[in-house]
Length: 483
Ligand code: SF4
View 1: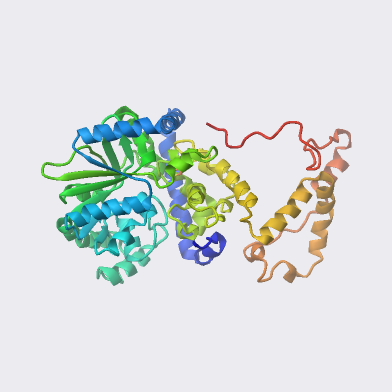
View 2: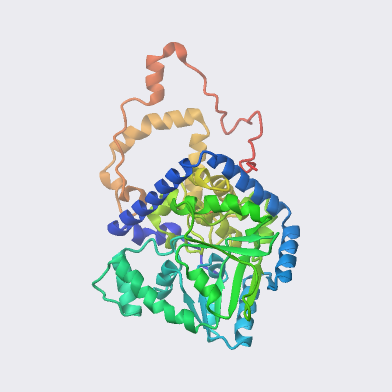
């Protein structure tokens, strides 16, 4: 049985490492600022977001038909199309393709789907060497770690960390952490793999049903080398990557790189439609839980995701805890809503790794209601009994206090003074994680309510929020209905 991810515990080492956390926070917030500048440079940005959301929702609402159309047009172009119900079938298909052709080396560009399927260890256990060719992904492969970000996989590492990894694995100078030197070292190391590989693999950013085209957006050109140098190209495609027409692509291409890195477009936007002369092109269409998610009323919106990473860059929890602490392929806000669909118990802590500030939803180019889904997941996690004893009981207590204005007022009038009278060790001790990096401000002499009653006696109003014990006049609105 898979072990439950303890996000708070897993992030402890990263949080305690000042230079790394400062760099990580600054670098990702920098991407968020670049995203804002790029978005503000386009007058119709909000219309584009609405359109992108509508195209995705329309496609997902008619997914079966668009998948059949994509299958048909791709086959007519000479592509071999495979269908995989889950990760195991995906890996088996890829392995069979390689084994039947005697391929012992596969070069690949970045694909979160193949991470999700754990394809690399599967192939390596069967004697096939797999080489990641995206720089960040290769750094993580050589260091034996998962990607910590869906766009910049090694963003949690400093240049000095990369110098250490490369010195140990490809023999560069340990003392030289110049990014140009390190990138050149990787370039020299990777080229022979491209030339020797029997097959190349790419992911897919968009799959166009109308033309049977797979579109891959990269900044390093490694996807083009992976697809074009070896005789066989395999593209792994999540079924949610479909878009209806080539003209729809323009909407997403304008948004993807601006949302991800603040740049107008990726260096390469490559279209693959048919095998090269004498070569083979295979598409593997993968479900792996996507159909089940499509049937989830509150969570199907996450299938609109175009993997830009903007929600991660803006999230204060992600920026300060690092991607590896999420314990899954997808980190940050998008990870908090996708991972529980794979294994609710294992990822039950992730929906709590959020302040629910809504910034993720505000920057999402396809208008996914991320923070609302996080809130929904919390309710499900609690209802299914996956909340720990301390959190469960303290939430019950908080509910009893916050749901009763009289009780709340009484407690806020007395608690500040009571805490001030306690010995300091009561709050600041090894057992209270809250007190480790915080200092409780001194409580004011009066609560706001007391001040208001003393200074605005003629304006006293009754609280409008009903007590928990009293039934609300209207049932609460469904938080997920933002379609
Ligand atoms: S959820 Fe939205 S913001 Fe986050 S990665 Fe997906 S598309 Fe980007």
